Length: 329
Image 1 (cartoon, one colour):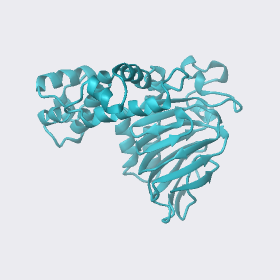
Image 2 (cartoon, helix red, strand yellow):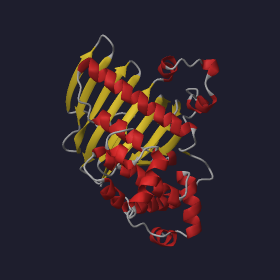
Image 3 (tube, one colour):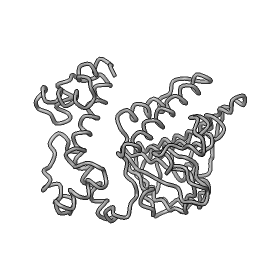
Image 4 (spheres, one colour):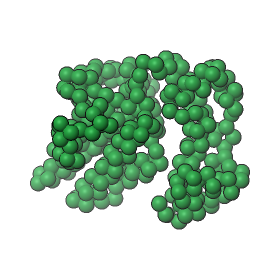
């Protein structure tokens, strides 16, 4: 069963039933908490206006139905930095489909009409900033936009531009700090602004260095992409004892050649490179938590030899696992 909901502004899929606000009219900072209607879902949306034209949105909700349809009307689109922590939003437009652990960078311009299927629990952090404010904050002149950023600034009648990338460990740390912000008032505003700007910088760097995925005609067909994502999820779930490329291809119904070529196109790296990066990032998170010994973390991410793990970790992050465990960055 599905529900169809008209959503004209890309923000809240459901109308509010409970709402509370914290306002600071002097500097435009405000915080608005909206509960989902109990008959449709449970959870909330928190809109935090950092400045006029600069909005941070935190969503945490679980739909009661297994399949909910949401329609976004065509509209002028601001700059958007989107991070999906949990769940999977499937769109009729390929580049707008973002899975858990992924991030989307959307330029300004014209947003086409889109249809979304959101069938499961979702946790998302979304940043919208008006292009003129973005330029003002960073001293960017209209006639001197840096070449790596030009694709983000389209005219209102030009379709906006989107790249999809992977949430890195550095991004995960900032996202968790936003989610668990312990402050109130002016300190909260300053803290959240600093973390949001950090996320923007990290996501822009990912885009500029080519680690993100651009929607492109030579990408594999949607059915192949879905199988490649299945392969990625299988690698992640079996990182301690990963399958061979042949076994992985058989499990997702692709030939080894299709999987190898498709994985490279979708993620910009081979399956082996992706698995290595994923293992290291998971290890870094476990070490940051500080609840496990280095040897136990190595075993958790699939390394039986502590020396090999330590060397691989230091090559990736520039510090040893022991230093990371002690809180060094």
